[in-house]
Length: 174
Image (cartoon, rainbow, N blue to C red):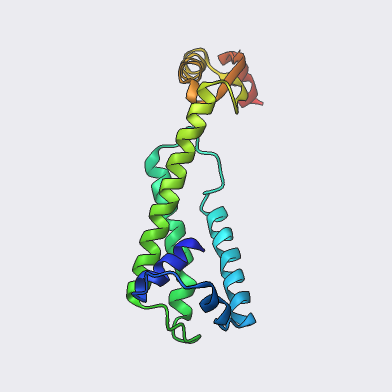
């Protein structure tokens, strides 16, 4: 909602704040408020579908950037598609570009700052997940060492289970 308003202000070349009396004079239709609320729900569904609400403790930063760019591009779709049929006069090319860019920047900054904050808290022993590592001896050891070494990931290893190869062969033969 904030990036929508920022993009609207930039696109309309009115970067000044309205006075309180000007805000009270504005005529806002109920239909427009319902449409905007529906759009925010759509954005939330797109964020969920693109994985923005999932934990990314071990994911690479490129994956997070890709998820944000895809989500913002998808959430622009209804505005672009309904721009002419619904008469969205605000949806100029300048608005769409500002909205897309502002939303990508704000989401990436929020994710980066949130990740840095969580790394700091996890290094202090807060927000930890307990983990049991299961695998073959070389794989399980390497993973357990990495999880213990990088405390900022927030994993506390409570057990290591080394799966024997003969057990895997018996299971696969049955």
